[in-house]
Image (cartoon, rainbow, N blue to C red):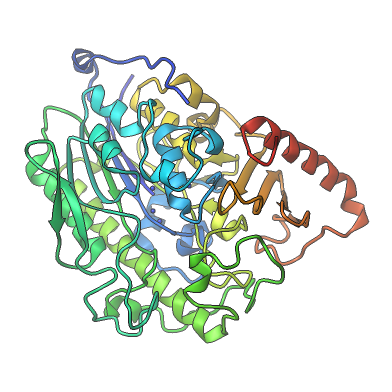
Length: 489
């Protein structure tokens, strides 16, 4: 097998019990390969697929990510499975790290603390690569606890928590883009030379700090006798939304999205979650336009640094051997459906951008097969020639990328603010159809995403779709019953 390529996993923040058996490839086996795969994990936070031109972003400016799409394959129907706290990213990243589905990622602790202080007997994605001979490095947003960080990585620099400090004068906004808070000067931790966690103060825009750390690792720290695995995760474009003014100036005429509403039309179970209270509804069009401009500009700043990193790999002679994967932990509403956050299962929040490019990847293709974000563990392992834990295999989508599979028949999603409170929403996607079910009220929504990609035409009351609704709701109830969903018992 020719493994002469570098795997880069680009993700806008990193969205289920025991390990079982993992086939470990001993370090001396690595010498049998022509060249082991390097893995570069790049994660973003709150980065909607509408922030990338190649994945449907009509107002986005992402030439470097778009270039990846032209060189590779877009996975257009990938979703994170959900969350059981308002901090969706903690659940999403815990699922990605373990390869487990939502209700089994931390089954004994279905609360924010479980994923945020990830303590599991499962071997984590970076941990497996580390155990099998990779030199592992992390920087940026982690949000899954120091124990998991130490297990997964040999080196870590400028690692931050879930959210950077607020601008107290303009909470969550960016009226003054020069202030040194928010996305400026992040305080984090590093793994020191003794292999212990120590605090670390950085200077500069957080996105630059993280990418500078990654480039420094390649130049100074990487043990070139080993393949590397790098995990770069920006806090951007999560709020507080701040960005260099020269980048914001690229977005002078941003409009509100086609599904803009000033306020959500009914109680979705969590309308007072923190994300929705940063700017209390109703959201005026000018507020949404302002926030979407800053949001898109933060994504463009990330795109700039991706381009710089690609050029560095080219200069190092690595680009031709590089498989690049770009994705995010979840999306964000920013004015869609009258919402500002991600604590919902509309497509702007539920679906994630995902692009792969490099050796072995079809060029200029789009795969419409359904996939879960947490299927990345077995997928990345497959491209690296490793055997992922057996429990992860039902979620792999390497076969979809290679054109050997159509993907999952259905995908399901769940969100609730707290498992002790029987509120929230469930979702099922089947073909062009999507059904949403609000558990506290019994309300349903039905959308045809092929004809109505912005989910503006709810078909739930139309009698011609009664059979469709009944069939999908039955499948959703079965999933809730068998998946461990606390509301499915």
